[in-house]
Structures are given as C-alpha cells and as structure tokens.
Length: 468
Image 1 (tube, rainbow, N blue to C red):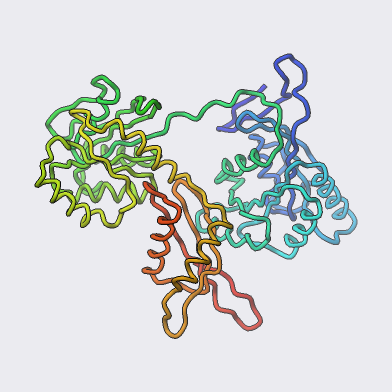
Image 2 (cartoon, rainbow, N blue to C red):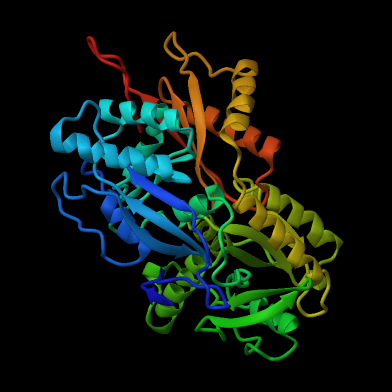
C-alpha cells in the first residue's frame, strides 16, 4: 500500500501480486557525525516525519529501519545515531550501532554538514567506511542555496567521490540523490512497473508574427492555435501534445514578445510573464526568427531569456520559402554578427507554411536535450583539462600565472562546471576553456556554466581555502 505525500511515496508492507511478501529489500544506512541532519534526511526519503528530529545532537541512538520507495523500487533506510571516534559510555554504544548498520547495509549514505565542511570526525569516519568496503554516497546536507551548494564541491577532498548537495529540510537536490541511491543498490523487487518519462517539454517562443502558432498547427494537424496575420493573436500559452519524428512532445505556443517585461503594460505585460514562465517550465526552447526579416533587438532579447534560464536551445529560421539568394547572403552576415555569442545553438531553416524541413526539428530537439543532460566523468574531465593547460597555460599576469588545480562537473540541465584554481582566471582564458570544452565534448544546443573557485592565499601557519 502506498500513500502520496507531497510528491514522495511512502511504502507500507510491500507485497507481491500473489499476496506473499515481496522478499528481502536492499538496505541503505544513513551515517555521519552528530547533528548533521541524518534524521531529517531519513524523513525526506521516506516521505513522512517519523524519525525524531531535534536541533541538538544525540537524539537518535539506535538503528531505526523504515520502509521507502523511489521510482517503483522498494528499499529499507536505516537511521543511526551520530558516529564519533574514541567515543565512551553511551556515545560508544551509539557509534557501535552505527557501525553495525554499515556492516549490514548494501549502500551507505555518509552525511556531512555542507555549511561546516569536512571535520576531523568526518575524516575519521571515512577511514571506518573504507574498512567496511561498502559503496558510499557522500551527502552534503544543509545546502539550502546555490552558494552553499557551490561550497560543497570542496568535499571532494574526503576522497569519496562526488558530493551530492541536498537540503533535507527543503528537499533541494533530493531527487538526484535518490536516483544515485537507485543506481548503487542491488536489484530489488519491483512494486510497480517503471513508467516511461512523460513527453519532453518544448517552448515555442519568438516575437509576434514569426509563425509560432502556424508551426504548432503544422505538427498537430489541426487549428490548435489561432493564426492571423495580425501580430499578437496568441496571449495565453497554448499547450499541445504533438508527434514529431515518431515521438510525442509537449509543445507550448507562447505570446510574441514585443517589449521588455518591465516596459509592457496591460494584457501584454501578463502575456510576457506567462511566456517567461513557459520558458522556465520547458526543457528546450525553439526560438523562431523570421528569416525574411533582419534579426532584431527583440530577437536578441528573447534568445537572452532562454540562455539565462539555462534551457537547451534550437533556433528555427521560419518562412524560409520567402528567402531568396540576396536575403541568404545578408542573413549569413547577420548570423555571424548578431549570434556570435551563441555559436553553439542548433540552427534550422524551415517553413511552417509549406512544411519544409519541419521533420528535422525532432532530431535537433533530441540533440540539444542530449547535450543539456550530458555529464563528463571527473577523471576524464581532469585528464583532458591537464593536457589543455599544459599545451596552453594561462598568461602570466604580474609575474605569476594562476594554475587550474582540478575541475568537477557540478550538475547537468544545463551542464555546470567548477574550476578550482590558485587564483582568478582572465575572462578571456575562461572563454578559451569553454570553447575547448565544447570542441572536445560537444554540448551543441545547450548553454554551459563555468565558475572559478580561487584558493585564498596562505596565512601564517594556515591552509589555503577556495573561495568564489
């Protein structure tokens, strides 16, 4: 029996279809030093407030198992008390219970306070976990915002691989963590069939009268959206499930944007807000440009909205049936001049009116989404980066040149990278790294974000520390 609790599913007494128990479930042990939020994380995983949580260390003392589920897979999560080395009396008994949980687990979640960073107790716990020879997932809890999430990348120093920044209290990052747990667990009884993911969400955006509604109608095979030569016919986003290239997509036709949201008024103002929301809710945006007209300031502004939202991007030059040889010559010049900051965007020439090349849109969307979700293994990334820096080191500034110590990919959708360095990098060199990263790994159709974490200078008797 399951109960949906705010997007989480609680599992109660799982049984097979025959009515017999579903069999032994894989076990996930949650361990860490006191007061790092283990019980809060357990509550987040099981979808209910059952594990006792209080803002003082030592509340949890025994191994406490709970049943849980994610994506149709059942497992047992075990809450433990705070582990400390060389503990005595009751603290020693609590630590022993935590070690017993590790010994009987299939996967261990090692929870660290992202706001504090690694401590001597955490490093001692890592040694204990290595002796257990169990798969360990490093959880950087209390990463309640993007700034703390970025700080969590420093936890690579613990040697347990990629840290998963989460906020057990608010749910931030918990879905990615649960996916990682599923990948690490042994096969378990399925309690429901895995369902395929829903249609990918595509926003059709552009200035008025570039043919967004015509394109939607072309794919849907009916007058799903009103089309008129008068600009601004569409006000509310029009949502449709359409088949493109043998696959179902969720297309949202949005209002044409004339002005900045702050300068719009009345109906146009609210239409602009809804269009911005449609971009945020989409995974990939198709920005339609009128190929028969000059690329305008409004076109540039809409492209900036998509890039700043971090969405995959396909630029569709519509009304290609109206383009002659002279216009093609000048359009190529405009693309080189006006779109030089986004050379990675996938471009497509089509005509919604005649149907020219509209069947190629599906392949462009798939390619952009694949790039948007690409993850580069850390070892491969750093091997490539080392060779790049050796071949083309950073220019010397003031008698010194900053060095890139290592890099990690902090996330996907869009891909986000962090460079740990000995000092700030020139903006030009950072752009060089991005260009070479694209040349090596692709990322066609997606923005990528590269941030630099420069190590602070060494103080007397102190260690350097990375900062943004």
